[in-house]
Length: 234
Ligand code: NDP
Image (cartoon, rainbow, N blue to C red; front, side):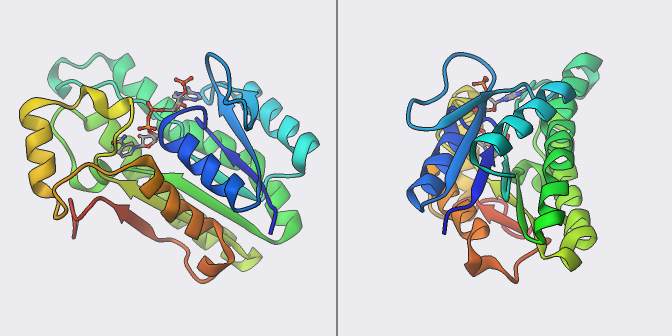
């Protein structure tokens, strides 16, 4: 099985682990990167997901290199934490622009090819914060909750064409993004998990790999938690 896969924000963290897991499974994998250099072992396309023209150009470049995207892992994301009362509007809008609208822009570019192929996998990296909420993360939580609604609605729009759409909601995962979570907040998050530890990017990648596989053919509109038991039931 070798499909054309695109992972946004695949140059580091969870995206890189996902890209490597799918490449290891035999897929042709492209990653977008925004800054620096892409990983040497993967096909990298420079792309800022807040720029519609850059997204369109990147998806086209991937199609030329490895065929129209059949599996999209929409992973690029940022945080701009702060209490809502003192949050600048730009801190709210930039998180929505990247995390939610970025995913929308990429999905709009890849869906036509999936419709033509009558097959596709759309996987959106959300967060347990999207359903559980978190102090100081109203912007991030709103963007991540919206991704779940986006995935579920796309599942309904595109299901008749054999395209699945799912969300994956990690809990606290050891990446650059989680480095800012320390002290009491980290203790609290760990105490809420059943496994009493942070997760690894590879543990998220294993779930994404399943959702991208033929084994998940009857799974769509799901929000799959990868949280070590944290946020269960939210
Ligand atoms: P990192 O901060 O390690 O990586 C974020 C990735 O997103 C980078 O590749 C970054 O590119 C890319 N990115 C950010 N903004 C843009 C943009 N405008 N255009 C293109 N790419 C962009 O984070 P993680 O690996 O931890 O997070 C990956 C996803 O998982 C995110 O959506 C995050 O919200 C989610 N998540 C993470 C959790 C965690 O605990 N780590 C928990 C729950 C969800 P660049 O290198 O150029 O900055």
